[in-house]
Length: 136
Image (cartoon, rainbow, N blue to C red; front, side, top):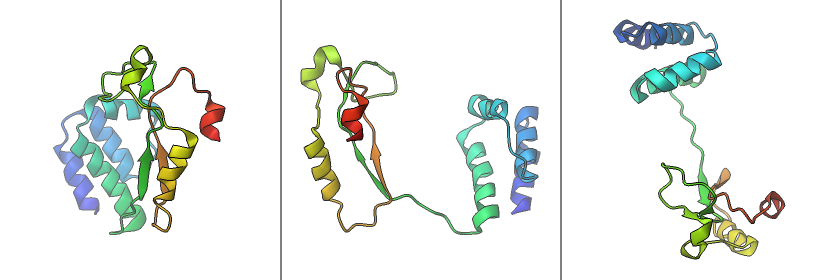
């Protein structure tokens, strides 16, 4: 396992990324600033290799997975984020959807008896919905 991170450290050219990989090898926590450096400079395989090194150190060859399903209560949103492919602005809400609490509970009930570990609720930021409705 240590040999794999040594290969990674030797291969990386960027001094900041090399220092971060060295910290990971020495089991030192990276700073917020180093996290930003990873985001800005590192490619996904590099970050994945660091994460895998930590996973193997902590859990050996065992990998844990979350079993979840998503509920998207609405795609009506006040934002127009560039990465979102399905939202509808409030001005065009008739093109979107708005699930009631009962409809959301019906979705949850379809997973009764299944080994689910998480209900992941995502969706638009609806300007007329208050958080108390969603918390119910």
